[in-house]
Structure formats: C-alpha cells, structure tokens
Length: 207
Figure (tube, rainbow, N blue to C red):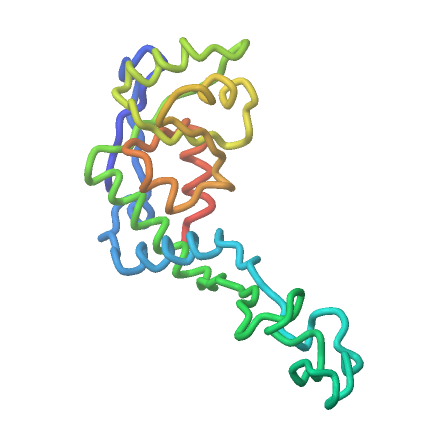
C-alpha cells in the first residue's frame, strides 16, 4: 500500500498517510487518460459559427422582375448567393463537438493520474490549509516550504480565503474535490491535497 508524508504549513513532516491501493497504486492507463483529456477539451469547444443558406435568409418570396424585356439578367429570387444580402453557398453550420465518456472510464483516468502523481513524487498532503484573511505571501511561503511551485491545490469544499490567497500566484490553481479533473491535474506539476480532501477523494473514487 503506497504511503505519503503529511506536512504542516511550515513544510515539516507531521505524520504519514496510507493511500488507497485502488486509487493511488494502480498501473497508470495512458490511453484512457488521453481519451478523457481529448473529450474534456472537445467539450469546451463552442460550435457557434454559422451562416444562412439561400433558404434561410429573409426575403426571396417573389421574382424581383419579369423574366424578359428589362435588359437585366434573369433573377428568380433576391436570396440568391449572387446577391448582396443573399444566402451563402455551403454555409458553415453550428455543430456540437462534445464527446461522451463513460463514468467508469473517467474514474479510471482519474485514478491513473493519482497513481502517476505518487509514482513521480508529485503529491503533497497538508494536515490543514486555512487563513484568517487572504494572504498571497503566506500561500507562497507554504508552497515554497513543500516544494510545490507549480501546483494544483485541492480542498474538500470551496474556501474563499484559500482561493483568494492563490489567485494572483502564477502557475497555481485552486479547486475542490468535486471540480477536480484529469486535465487540470496534468497541467500542474504538483497535486497539493489537504488531509480532508484526501479522505474525500478516497471516498469518492473507491470502487
């Protein structure tokens, strides 16, 4: 069973925690992780571009002028792509880029990244993380003490003071266990969990 040290805010080791084998000790499945990341990025895409075809633009109900005798080219509708304000030939249409991922696949991808963080010594567990008032300087000192300059900080629930303390630090992001995702964990070098967040993760992702 994998183990990890528990640090206080000064970077001192104050204990250790046994990690769940099925969450933090599996063989990382790279293809599944790739699949979930691709789906997550695809779901962020907005397929909002689009133009109208000649059938969709306003107008075009009657023939602009008679067929013969005007000296002008024949015209059947003012919604023609040849006309200003007319439709677009092969108009681009809004589309849905989203990809569905099975819950078990997403769960496996999460557990694969958790295990990878342990294998590469990129997991930090804090006994507690709280501030009386938002203090960016104190947050920087905590991250320096545990050697996590580029970190994803995970708390069990949203903590406004922790969030505001880290907002202005480059390459640092704060999230909750419920909002934790594969892409964010891969984006940041270190995964920083509070002890309460670790307990909640083991509860959520247990088989």
